[in-house]
Image (cartoon, rainbow, N blue to C red; front, top):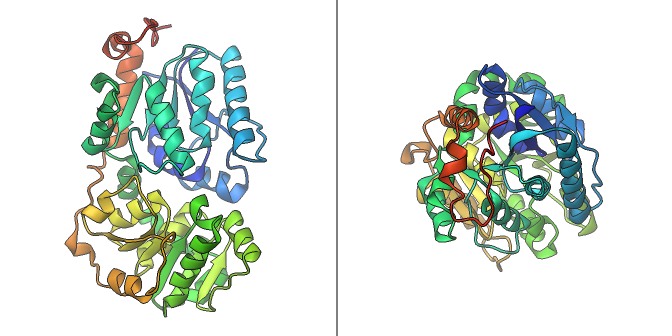
Length: 385
């Protein structure tokens, strides 16, 4: 029996968990299986990130029905449950707030402890599927790794036991700190089309994938209008669904916007480091921009990462609003400078804190005692063979 299973399914989660996976692999005190849920399945959304960050390939990969959210979630639950019929673990780890984390339903049906990395983040926007997912797994988890004290407080406000939540800082800081030189090589992997486009000119990096933005014609139109307001070059690695919706809504970007298919992490971080600023609706991207000192426009009605506003690294652009003056957002972001903020996400040792805690939980009976006293069922010896 392996001690742990860690189930991931999308590209940002591979990035954020990469050091955790490598530290677990290096440890002689704990064993684990890495399971890929199948949520992201194309090479440029998955395999390239394993190789670029030297992440061990998954031990198991689920084959799931990716027709829609319900088929993804139901088949991940089914695959997880069936995998646990054949493979026993002391605990199963999830990271983030996507369809993949709903595999926790299959875990609790086996009465196996659930561990959630990135717990207690809240946008308080129930339109977002991620808000439903993160809330569900947090209330089913036996150990939560929350990045910040403010996130822990949000969990406490919902009645989650204080003993369940361990504040660690954000592992994305670790990844960025450890890979700065590697990011500088990202230009070597860029397509000539992108290199010829940016040359030595100033440019902006843009992404947009959130369904509340791209599936709503008004919101996506506002995003296009914002990008078209910029006079500088914009590199826009665009997900396939976003490309599809631009065509469906008959929206056109100006010639100074270069649309590409999704790219690897090293290429992406190279572009971010060399950009003037970032425009994105990705929570991870605005975190990364804040950490490396790049201003951003966060295209969100609500966010689970308000810290970027608090420290002044990002300005808010709400695509769902009626917007008359798009230029003002470009003007504001151009006035932000990195020497005006200090990144608030941690000290760069989050991965070690998480792995050390997992080793302790796995090797002692701490898990039995600290967090389930108020539950009706007994998970004693949960972390013991």
